[in-house]
Length: 171
Image 1: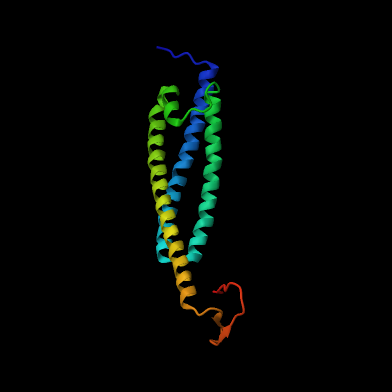
Image 2 (image 1 turned 90 degrees about the vertical axis):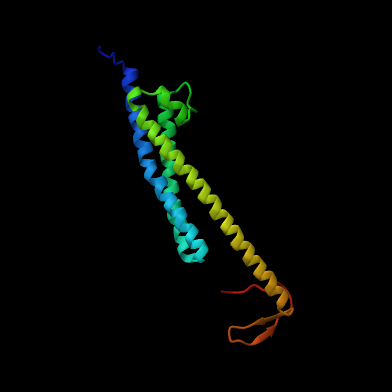
């Protein structure tokens, strides 16, 4: 039985392929981000601040590219369904050309699992950072309590009396 191809079906198929390509490009970036978050967790625990800063910069590059791809995904969705541009990938799948549904379902599932893992790990890293900051604040409070008012140690080891104001340590 011959299939009637209209220009809108061809356009729809091309846009679906663009959408698939965009999602396929996003998938390894999400995997990379997940790996970066796992590394970030290790660096937080090991207190390797220089490497943590480097990791944050690298993460920004990946996040910037993911934001660009997300814009492309939204644009492809709008071109596919201009009457309903706010469709999610899950609600879009049944509406595309049938031959591409399985691929989109697979990509949706993979991206869904990755984003859930990223969200969970990001929350855990946030909790770790909050705890580290609380420990640092507690240590400073302890030092303020243990240090006689107005006395500090010079780099030479000599103790010096300070007249007033807050004492901020240099590291």
